[in-house]
Each structure stands twice: as structure tokens, then as C-alpha cells.
Image (cartoon, rainbow, N blue to C red):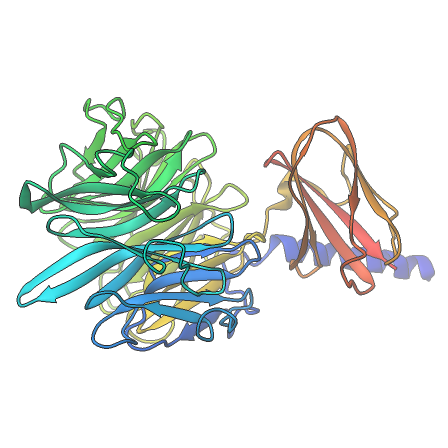
Length: 526
């Protein structure tokens, strides 16, 4: 009888682990907010345009709100990992900053010291003329303005005519690059891909481009919508060309010079006409410097989301999708109304799957949508319902804008519905790369252990290692070792579990070696 009971316990435990780690991908995580979603009002018409996750797992979201008369202001919010506002940040979870008559935050980046750098645009109205300028604000980790940056934490860059900022990057030396659409100094009716660089204290870096600014040649009526680093901090910028409505991609070196060998036009610019209207909204760079971009196109009937892939030299990868493009068509509603879709964000999850976020629905009722593809562009049909996840916050539009991947691989989507709205979606780490307790070259002792034991793990291998501790609900308890370099082929690492108040029971150690070799060890605390 004891053996039967023991076998049943082992069977139940294995089924539990299997269910937790392999199921429910593409469903709302009901531990977040209220049944997987959260909605907050900070004034009127609260927008969310970009997001980042801090080292402690807290979520930063930026956009704008009409909480300060007479117009919109920068809005920076911070959420705890459970979806609640972090009341220790700013004014009970959020910060607003107004310069000019209106301003809007479009992009955020995090410094290594935890400071938060937010970029956007400020607008000043004079009669019938609206002037727009570059606005960059740096906040301390608690949400207060960093008074060492610019003037009292704020830097305004005034150039001739108008500028719009949509993206920000921080280089390894702390320099700050912003990109968007800059009106040409010689022609107020023409704009181009524009970039500017600041030093870490907020002064213009005159070594970048020409006196700190880049006006990209051979683009007219163009606007950067997103930027990412590629290979030694070169810059990939994607966006659109107005009027003609082509999509654009440009590569710059780290000092803002266009790399003319990129693409096949000898000017560093990839310009593609795709249907009547096309633009690239976001991009992501793979570990081997392949470029994936997400956008939307219009064919006189409806908007359709699409994904495209380019090699690092700017040549489209024709093995991806159909001639380098995957076009998504979600058909019609049950009453025959066309469903439009917009691919507004794209990223890689911890399984190296391509996650694409959409605004999707009939013209009067957009919802959040999500799909998962492998890097070759094959849809993951086990994700969501037949490969597609969607959720709504009620009747009418939800405008999806931005998403991020947590360390536990869950996906957080953010946007607006008058209120700022977030949803978290289950997306467990794929353990098909490793098996529980069948770990070669890695051992843990003592196992079982108690709170007083000194715990060690033997690792036969060299390179970068990360070790995380999870409970059986798939919840991350602690990051035990982060980005440590092992130089020897045989290593003994001490794990400080005594500092963690762990109840008795079973846990999982997830081990990541060189960003690709995953192992898991089942451990027991007595």
C-alpha cells in the first residue's frame, strides 16, 4: 500500500509539473490585476505608448494624460508584478510632467543605475501655428525628476520648424539617442528620418552626425517609428514615408552615419511599396543580427498586419513567409464586417519565439491580439485558440501599443481605452529543451535540504550562467545567479537559499547556460 501511495504521489507531482510548465500558453494570467487585466485613470484620455521592465520585475509604462490643464502631459506609471500600481513611485504610482501647451511621451529606456529616461514631443501653440520640439526627461527610480540632467531633469531641443520623437536608445557609454521625424532646415514642408544624441548629463553631443543631429538624406516626408541596436551598436531605424506611404528601414553606425552598403540602393535605405499604404511600427533584432519588423498595410478594403524579415545587410530574407513577408488576414465578423489588424509591437520571448502584438477588430471595436511564431515564421498553433489570443476591456476600441516579456516568459500588453489598460498572458518557458531531474553534468546537493544547509551545485561547463528558483505554480521566487561567467570546466557554485524564507515543499531550479542550454532540477526542502 505504501508503494502504491508513493507511486501515486510521484505520478501526481509529475503531472502537476507538466501541467504548470507546458499548458495554458496564450491565456490570461488571472494572478495579474483583476482576472489578468488592469485599468487605471490618471486624468482624461490616458495613453500608453511604450514600456520597459525593471530589474526587480516592476513595469514602467509611458504615454500621456490630460490631468494637467490646458493640455496633455508626459505620463510615467509603474506597476508591481501583480498588476497593482506601485504607490512608492511618484504620486501614488504615476508621474506627470508638462512643458509647453501639450506634450506626449512616446518611448522609454532604463539606465544601468535604475534611472528612467523618457523621450517625446512638446507642442506650443501660437495662434494657428503649432511648434513641436524634442523633449527628454530623466527620472530617478522613485519617480522624482533627476535634477542633474538637462535643466532640472528636463531637456528641450529646439530646432527650426517641427520635430516628432518616437524612439529612444541608450548606448553602453550612457549616451542617449532619440529618433523620429525632423523637418528639413531648408524646407519647412519636408521631413526626414531624424536622430539626435545627448551625453549622459543631457547636453547635445556634437560628435554625433552634424553637431549632434542627423537629417537622413534621400528621404522626404519620412518618420522613424522605432529603433534598435544591431552589431556593435549600429542602429536600425524603421518607419514610414508619408504621402507615398512606403515602409522604410535605414542602418546607421554608432555615430549617426548612414551605412550606404545596407540594402541594395547604394544609399543605406530600404524603401518598399506594399499595397496602397505600408509602414513598419516596431522591429526586433535576433541574436545573429537578423532584423524582424512588424507593421500594417492597407489595400483599399481594410488594414492588415504584416511581419517581414531582413538579413543584417538589408536584403530581405525570401525564405521567411512569402518572399520575406507574412501577411495576416483575420477575415470578417459573423455579420460579414471586415476585421482590420495592425502589428504594433514585436519581440522575442525566452523560448526564442517571435511574439507579435496586434490591435485587431472591426473598425468600431479594436481589441488586443497576440500570436507566437518560431523564428522561421511558422505559427505556433498551441498558443491561445488555434494560434491566436485576443482579449477585450469592454465595448468599443482598445488601442494596443506596447508589450514586454517578463523573466518568467509571461507577456504584458499595454494600451489605452480612455484609461490606461494592461493585460498579462501566460507563456511558460518551453521545457522541451530539457527534462526534469535528467540533467547531465549538473548536480545539486544536499537534496533534500533544510534551511540551515549550505547548498551547492556542480556545473561541468564554461560560459555565462543564470540560475532561477521557481515554485510549482511556475512563479519566479528568486534569481539566484545572474549573468555570471564560469571560466573553468568544473565549477562548484554556492546557492544562498538560507536568505529566502521557503516553506517546506518541492521547487524547481532553472539553469540557463550560454543563453541556450536549459536544464531544470527538482529540489525538496524538508
